[in-house]
Image (cartoon, rainbow, N blue to C red):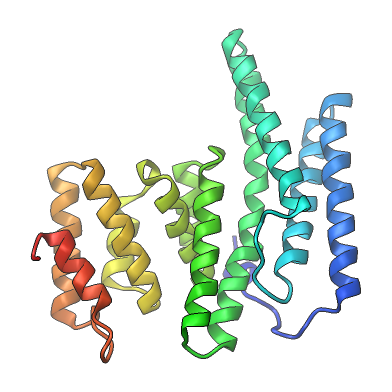
Length: 258
């Protein structure tokens, strides 16, 4: 994946007609793909329709502002994913592991929906001054990433690929997914985001993942590595920005320094 894929091309306002058209086209593609999955043997083509339609719907939602994913388009997406996963479970129950794996891969194609979320994160960060309102928008994106992680169609490799793609938004979305599924979190990525974050917000999210991982329990080696990263960040002075000591306080809590 190229880094440019994740970059927001423009912060210009997208006309309502264009957003409505994208949403309608996306919904049609998802529905067509879902029907094709069950009516044809061209599983790859059907999955591509679903993935492309999902992206269009999410682009329509995020084109000009942050909105809840509770809209009809997202519900169509969730229904499609859940249906796929249920079929995968049924296939596995009767011993058809190959079919189950294929179904899971098809469901995972919908992970493409993270791309517009990553682009929206970068748009908000670059176009809006620091404020509680901006933080609230970014936090909403993280919340939605956590919700998507809970659908159980995300794997460790997929999260790592997302983070390593290079975009600031992709890295944040990966950390959000880890918060939703801390058992899939990668220690090396968390350490990197704590020691060498792209932003204070990224470091904060990485510290939250770190806290979740330590609460769940990790190996002595992993624990030592994450605590060492916190000490490094504190020594470098990156845990404090002006009067903002929230990350330092969280780091101290993680280390047990109340």
